[in-house]
Length: 213
Image (cartoon, rainbow, N blue to C red; front, side):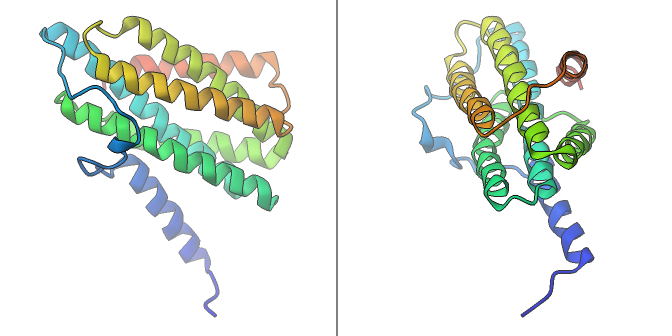
Protein backbone atom coordinates (compact mmCIF):
# COMPACT_ATOMS: atom_id res chain seq x y z
CA UNK A 1 0.00 0.00 0.00
CA UNK A 2 1.44 3.34 -1.05
CA UNK A 3 2.08 5.85 1.74
CA UNK A 4 1.07 9.46 1.10
CA UNK A 5 3.99 11.88 1.22
CA UNK A 6 4.32 15.62 1.76
CA UNK A 7 4.95 15.94 -1.96
CA UNK A 8 1.72 14.07 -2.72
CA UNK A 9 -0.12 16.41 -0.39
CA UNK A 10 1.18 19.56 -2.07
CA UNK A 11 0.47 18.15 -5.55
CA UNK A 12 -3.10 17.36 -4.50
CA UNK A 13 -3.64 20.86 -3.10
CA UNK A 14 -2.11 22.46 -6.19
CA UNK A 15 -4.35 20.36 -8.41
CA UNK A 16 -7.44 21.46 -6.47
CA UNK A 17 -6.36 25.09 -6.70
CA UNK A 18 -5.70 24.93 -10.45
CA UNK A 19 -9.03 23.21 -11.06
CA UNK A 20 -10.79 26.04 -9.23
CA UNK A 21 -8.79 28.89 -10.76
CA UNK A 22 -8.04 27.83 -14.32
CA UNK A 23 -10.27 24.92 -15.34
CA UNK A 24 -12.76 25.64 -18.13
CA UNK A 25 -15.91 23.48 -17.87
CA UNK A 26 -17.28 21.68 -20.90
CA UNK A 27 -20.15 23.40 -22.68
CA UNK A 28 -22.74 21.05 -21.19
CA UNK A 29 -21.09 20.38 -17.81
CA UNK A 30 -23.62 20.78 -14.95
CA UNK A 31 -25.85 22.72 -17.32
CA UNK A 32 -28.62 20.13 -17.28
CA UNK A 33 -29.02 20.21 -13.49
CA UNK A 34 -31.40 23.17 -13.78
CA UNK A 35 -33.67 24.26 -16.59
CA UNK A 36 -32.07 27.66 -17.06
CA UNK A 37 -33.61 29.91 -19.71
CA UNK A 38 -31.98 29.62 -23.12
CA UNK A 39 -28.66 31.34 -23.66
CA UNK A 40 -29.15 35.05 -24.20
CA UNK A 41 -26.95 38.13 -24.23
CA UNK A 42 -28.46 41.43 -23.03
CA UNK A 43 -29.19 43.52 -26.13
CA UNK A 44 -27.37 46.73 -25.26
CA UNK A 45 -23.58 46.93 -24.79
CA UNK A 46 -24.09 48.58 -21.41
CA UNK A 47 -26.39 45.83 -20.12
CA UNK A 48 -24.04 43.13 -21.42
CA UNK A 49 -21.07 44.78 -19.71
CA UNK A 50 -23.00 44.97 -16.42
CA UNK A 51 -24.05 41.31 -16.56
CA UNK A 52 -20.49 40.31 -17.35
CA UNK A 53 -19.03 42.34 -14.47
CA UNK A 54 -21.52 40.91 -11.97
CA UNK A 55 -20.98 37.35 -13.14
CA UNK A 56 -17.21 37.79 -12.87
CA UNK A 57 -17.68 38.77 -9.22
CA UNK A 58 -19.87 35.73 -8.61
CA UNK A 59 -17.27 33.50 -10.25
CA UNK A 60 -14.64 34.92 -7.86
CA UNK A 61 -16.96 34.11 -4.97
CA UNK A 62 -17.14 30.49 -6.09
CA UNK A 63 -13.35 30.29 -6.44
CA UNK A 64 -13.12 31.52 -2.84
CA UNK A 65 -15.76 29.00 -1.74
CA UNK A 66 -13.64 26.15 -3.11
CA UNK A 67 -10.61 27.45 -1.22
CA UNK A 68 -12.52 27.92 2.04
CA UNK A 69 -14.10 24.48 2.07
CA UNK A 70 -10.91 22.69 1.03
CA UNK A 71 -8.95 24.47 3.79
CA UNK A 72 -11.58 23.80 6.43
CA UNK A 73 -11.76 20.13 5.47
CA UNK A 74 -7.99 20.00 5.77
CA UNK A 75 -8.00 21.67 9.20
CA UNK A 76 -10.56 19.50 10.98
CA UNK A 77 -9.82 16.10 12.50
CA UNK A 78 -13.52 15.23 12.63
CA UNK A 79 -14.26 12.74 9.80
CA UNK A 80 -17.96 13.65 9.69
CA UNK A 81 -17.22 17.37 9.47
CA UNK A 82 -14.53 16.73 6.86
CA UNK A 83 -17.15 14.93 4.76
CA UNK A 84 -19.55 17.86 5.29
CA UNK A 85 -17.02 20.34 3.92
CA UNK A 86 -16.13 18.14 0.95
CA UNK A 87 -19.82 17.68 0.08
CA UNK A 88 -20.41 21.44 0.23
CA UNK A 89 -17.35 22.06 -1.96
CA UNK A 90 -18.71 19.58 -4.52
CA UNK A 91 -22.02 21.44 -4.68
CA UNK A 92 -20.22 24.77 -4.93
CA UNK A 93 -18.28 23.31 -7.85
CA UNK A 94 -21.52 23.38 -9.81
CA UNK A 95 -21.85 27.08 -9.04
CA UNK A 96 -18.29 27.59 -10.25
CA UNK A 97 -19.12 25.84 -13.51
CA UNK A 98 -22.33 27.80 -14.05
CA UNK A 99 -20.68 31.17 -13.50
CA UNK A 100 -17.71 30.23 -15.69
CA UNK A 101 -19.98 29.15 -18.52
CA UNK A 102 -22.10 32.29 -18.23
CA UNK A 103 -18.95 34.42 -18.39
CA UNK A 104 -17.99 32.70 -21.63
CA UNK A 105 -21.49 33.15 -23.09
CA UNK A 106 -21.30 36.88 -22.34
CA UNK A 107 -17.90 37.10 -24.03
CA UNK A 108 -15.97 37.74 -20.82
CA UNK A 109 -13.19 36.23 -18.76
CA UNK A 110 -12.60 35.39 -15.08
CA UNK A 111 -10.82 37.80 -12.75
CA UNK A 112 -7.07 38.07 -13.35
CA UNK A 113 -6.64 38.05 -9.56
CA UNK A 114 -8.21 34.63 -8.98
CA UNK A 115 -4.95 33.13 -7.64
CA UNK A 116 -4.84 35.92 -5.04
CA UNK A 117 -8.48 35.44 -4.07
CA UNK A 118 -8.00 31.68 -3.78
CA UNK A 119 -4.89 32.02 -1.63
CA UNK A 120 -6.49 34.55 0.72
CA UNK A 121 -9.65 32.48 1.16
CA UNK A 122 -7.63 29.31 1.75
CA UNK A 123 -5.63 31.04 4.48
CA UNK A 124 -8.79 32.33 6.19
CA UNK A 125 -10.41 28.90 6.07
CA UNK A 126 -7.32 27.24 7.48
CA UNK A 127 -7.04 29.73 10.36
CA UNK A 128 -10.73 29.37 11.24
CA UNK A 129 -10.47 25.60 11.11
CA UNK A 130 -7.36 25.50 13.29
CA UNK A 131 -9.07 27.52 16.04
CA UNK A 132 -11.94 25.07 16.46
CA UNK A 133 -14.65 23.24 14.54
CA UNK A 134 -17.29 25.52 16.09
CA UNK A 135 -15.44 28.63 14.89
CA UNK A 136 -14.96 27.07 11.46
CA UNK A 137 -18.67 26.31 11.13
CA UNK A 138 -19.57 29.76 12.41
CA UNK A 139 -17.30 31.26 9.79
CA UNK A 140 -19.23 29.33 7.12
CA UNK A 141 -22.56 30.56 8.48
CA UNK A 142 -21.47 34.21 8.47
CA UNK A 143 -19.82 33.89 5.06
CA UNK A 144 -22.99 32.46 3.54
CA UNK A 145 -25.12 35.19 5.11
CA UNK A 146 -22.93 37.83 3.53
CA UNK A 147 -22.97 35.96 0.21
CA UNK A 148 -26.78 35.93 0.30
CA UNK A 149 -26.83 39.71 0.81
CA UNK A 150 -24.36 40.13 -2.05
CA UNK A 151 -26.49 37.95 -4.35
CA UNK A 152 -29.60 39.96 -3.44
CA UNK A 153 -27.76 43.12 -4.50
CA UNK A 154 -26.75 41.55 -7.79
CA UNK A 155 -30.30 40.35 -8.47
CA UNK A 156 -31.44 43.96 -8.12
CA UNK A 157 -28.69 45.26 -10.42
CA UNK A 158 -28.95 42.68 -13.19
CA UNK A 159 -30.51 43.90 -16.45
CA UNK A 160 -34.16 42.89 -16.54
CA UNK A 161 -33.78 40.97 -19.80
CA UNK A 162 -30.91 38.79 -18.55
CA UNK A 163 -33.11 36.00 -17.23
CA UNK A 164 -30.43 33.35 -17.72
CA UNK A 165 -28.02 35.02 -15.28
CA UNK A 166 -30.90 35.73 -12.90
CA UNK A 167 -31.90 32.05 -12.81
CA UNK A 168 -28.33 31.03 -12.04
CA UNK A 169 -28.05 33.51 -9.16
CA UNK A 170 -31.42 32.52 -7.70
CA UNK A 171 -30.40 28.86 -7.59
CA UNK A 172 -27.05 29.78 -6.09
CA UNK A 173 -28.75 31.88 -3.41
CA UNK A 174 -30.96 28.93 -2.47
CA UNK A 175 -27.94 26.66 -2.07
CA UNK A 176 -25.90 29.22 -0.11
CA UNK A 177 -28.77 29.73 2.32
CA UNK A 178 -28.93 26.00 2.94
CA UNK A 179 -25.16 25.75 3.46
CA UNK A 180 -25.28 28.49 6.08
CA UNK A 181 -28.23 26.91 7.88
CA UNK A 182 -26.53 23.50 7.87
CA UNK A 183 -23.34 24.94 9.35
CA UNK A 184 -25.29 26.70 12.08
CA UNK A 185 -27.26 23.54 12.89
CA UNK A 186 -24.01 21.57 13.08
CA UNK A 187 -22.80 23.77 15.94
CA UNK A 188 -21.44 26.92 14.31
CA UNK A 189 -20.36 29.53 16.83
CA UNK A 190 -21.47 33.15 16.16
CA UNK A 191 -18.69 35.25 14.68
CA UNK A 192 -17.69 38.29 16.81
CA UNK A 193 -18.89 41.65 15.46
CA UNK A 194 -15.39 43.02 14.64
CA UNK A 195 -14.67 39.96 12.51
CA UNK A 196 -18.04 40.29 10.75
CA UNK A 197 -17.22 43.89 9.89
CA UNK A 198 -13.77 42.91 8.66
CA UNK A 199 -15.27 40.15 6.50
CA UNK A 200 -17.80 42.59 5.03
CA UNK A 201 -15.07 45.13 4.26
CA UNK A 202 -12.90 42.50 2.57
CA UNK A 203 -15.93 41.36 0.58
CA UNK A 204 -16.55 44.89 -0.69
CA UNK A 205 -12.92 45.30 -1.74
CA UNK A 206 -13.04 41.97 -3.58
CA UNK A 207 -16.31 42.69 -5.38
CA UNK A 208 -15.36 46.19 -6.48
CA UNK A 209 -12.00 44.97 -7.74
CA UNK A 210 -13.31 41.83 -9.46
CA UNK A 211 -15.93 43.82 -11.40
CA UNK A 212 -13.08 45.48 -13.28
CA UNK A 213 -10.04 43.16 -13.11
